[in-house]
Length: 270
Image 1 (cartoon, one colour):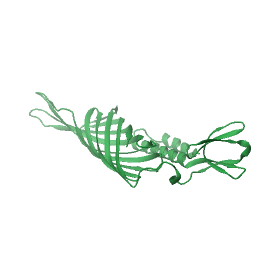
Image 2: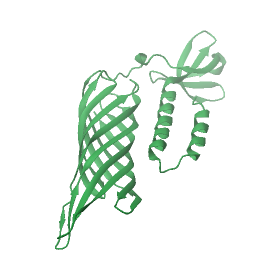
Image 3: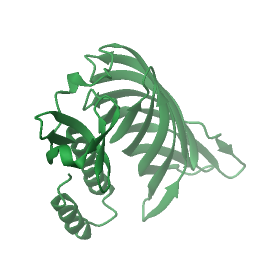
Image 4: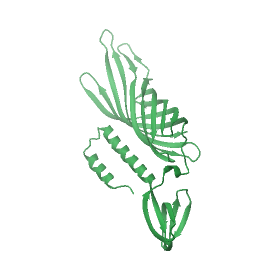
């Protein structure tokens, strides 16, 4: 069972937080998400029979005269209530007793699509403007798995939030559990190249440049029985770009843009 006090504390805290502080909101969301996932995985039902036998798993149904239990191995058994001495919830056994085992090392790939949502900050000499924007992102990551839990590699992707950006980056991941379903943490850092075509007219010239970016987040990995997995994650990301505007026989100036957003992604991993 998940302690309901976690939700009460989160609710009270969220009322005191301004939604403009996206990093704090995301941290609390991902923390609760990870706590719930871990709690669900490590808790199980225990059925003790009058004969002394013990069954562990998940109680799926309880009717008038019998109880149905899905065991750790995936078998569904029916137990007459008259034969049951007691039932309770406890921590599951060591994860090494589960039938699924993550490979210890080797190549990995994650290809995903996503939607970045957040704010765009425009910094000018005399004023600034901030507004909410949404876009599209697609990326592929290739790397190596170390000691089962740690993964590191590099990736490239396209992100469109007003301007199209080609992004090259390093990626690091940590899978918290070695089970078939596991939460994970992820961090990215790299550089984005602005693909927008420069504008040149008789009275003005504008050139577009990219900038660095970084992101941190967490997600959930659902491994298939044989190979591959579906992954979902949310990431807080900050990236930079700029544009230089110049006029004939006049000084030029630079507009700097800082993109702060949360990126929701879904993909396949191998």
